[in-house]
Length: 478
Image (cartoon, rainbow, N blue to C red):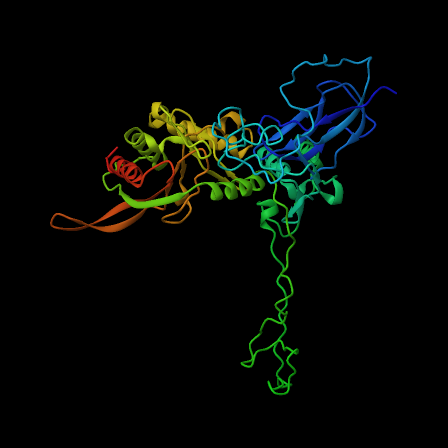
């Protein structure tokens, strides 16, 4: 037998500490050729197919669908076949396959001062297995210290259908109703192959379940629990006649009451975060520990707007003009070296909310785009986010961020600034308010604005002038 070769999970060009196995394309004992698809892995931003680094027999695979594999850990083991094509020794594949370097005791992740140094799903940098000083600084994802282990995760059941988030995303992209897909995965989970097969052959799908509407897995009717009727024949025992550890189903007034003692846990199962939410949790905690945030809020009067104004487009224009007026807010800050980088271009990170978590694609060169180009670019980014096809390069290196949460609800906010950026703008829900004018009062439409900035890199005066510049621009008719 020839010598075995161990293949370690590469960083996938995203600087992330781990990835989740979606689907193996081979099983142990199979023979695979060089660069054939080996496995699909879900990172915080995309589902990536990892090719085989060798030609030969598969000896061992690291886990099953749903398992989390740490970057640099063993992903697969092969017995190379010399009669099949092999990659030349030392040939650069663009990935790092070596095992992780031991992390220093007590080391913590550090925000990357140059998030555009490598393509990532928010701000990419080498993982901590490569260097402690270069960690990701994305709005949602970041490279964090992690043990060299594989964590088991199960497919999540939603609406009675068990499937991985990546499988659900693929089903949504292909227009497949998961509730009608024949599941072939472990424990009745729907796999990626099941979805693709259902999309290719609609006749193989199951009939619509009873009680479900066209909405599929999200439209199942809940089953009502029967509530016991209060007894009308037997009086409730008096407080004096009950021992302290006895409880009845009714209160003294005859109304139903909670019968479980406080120590009993509530229903539901703990769910390990993964993908976008997993890395969002890491980076939000890291940002909270490293930034000195301060928030200013005010209202922008948009009474003068002409019909047809694009709210997001106008916010982007206002941010661009404010960045030109106050460059200190369009910058990166390195808290370790106490250095600041002012940017000549304005790349705005646009927060996009999805069921899988928060994505922040970059609207490049916003200062050079007209209103039509801004809307076209934002629509393209949103579409790519929704179908998980957005390139990693679109999710890194923005210089300031925008969260237009007001399209859902809310007035003011304290959004999180993630290093190395120093500022984020949040726009609340527009409303009408009574405004005093010459000779009386009028009802004007206003947009609530909040600007959170890192007070280490910006002064209160700079932030206030930035906010005023935005308000002045938004007050213009068009």
